[in-house]
Image (cartoon, rainbow, N blue to C red):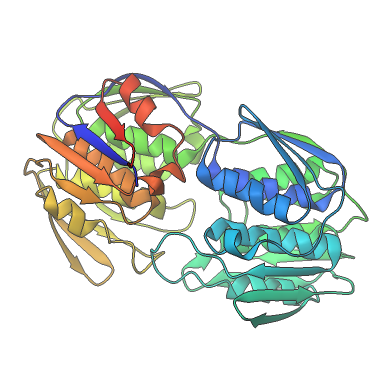
Amino acid sequence: MDSFLIKGGTPLRGEVEISGSKNAALPIMAAALLTPDPCVIRRVPNLSDVHFMGSILESAGATVKFQGDTVTIEAARVKGVGDYELIRKMRGSICILGPLLGRTGKALVSLPGGCVIGARPIDLHLKGLRALGAKISIENGYVNATARKLRGAELFLGGRAGPTVLGTANVLMAAVLAEGVTIIESAACEPEVIDLANFLNAMGARVSGAGSPTLTVTGVRSLHGAEHEVIPDRIEAATFAVAAAATDGDVTIRGARADHLHAVLDKLREAGVSVERSGSALKVSRPGRLKAIDITTLPYAGFPTDVQAQMMVLMALTPGISIITERIFESRFMHVSELARLGADIAIEGPSAIIKGGKALSGAPVMASDLRASAALVIAGLAARGTTEVSRVYHIDRGYENIDGKLRQLGAKIVRQEAS
């Protein structure tokens, strides 16, 4: 397995371009199954998860062609079965369930895998699809869904930790070809859901209310091909912003959407970080001392769980006591023990991490446990004295396009060591 070797202590300086959003691209690629016509999707990040999704779509009968950051998908003939071994490895692959069911009236999809960050059941996905008239059973690791005809319904998708993003996407994609009107209450409001709705509407769907807790879908008989450009990755932008602050750097982040980052930028400013907005660019620097803050992760537009680990590194460098409370996933503090190897003083009490910050970090060998934890460990290595080796970086390759190359452009001393 590849690893990163990082010599810390160098402030990041310069400009970096943000790639397209992985969390938007995956369901948009899945939505191409809803039409036999070609769909052209641009600004698709070059990530292992994206190529996994391409393989999954091919296993369902689609033709998928990658050319640079553009992917062309043609699903002229689709079967209602996805490859078990591919789907079970990636959480985002469950989003083929809705379009397969909507297009073919059947879907046989394995239960998904992904990062080990706590229980992420798909009960709300199934609840929504059943409300549309699907018959669903789970047998031998597969979700088996069938429907002679999906029909519009009013349904509620709120869960214990708030709305479900992939569940909203799945139900939305199934509903666009259902007969009648579907109203989804407690729908996820994330920008990625809005991007999916915009793509579906470009295909001829009738979706309104995206970005609000109430989605209204008026079913249509068929959809046609469309072209679409994926939104920038707000989590990648946030990660580079935190890295700039943690290394006492000065970084201009280009292609970001500040309107997707209100909660993150607010907390960075509260922590004493300067964030200046200029069009689609954000200039991040650290003009003075950092300040301890408290953070609670919440559904959008609250502070994103996907930036929790990165901010924990910044707080470990900040004098005083900070508290980060995780309200989305119950097992998303697995990076804490690895940060402790670098000298961070962090205690876990229930859903909260109490960070006694201000002590310098020192390099050490660490191991990534999931996608965002790996990004946090890279930031910690960049800020630490000495050399840090981050192993199992296949996690970070799932969600960050060429992160080591982009960091080197900013002056970071980071090299990829390929597994022998």
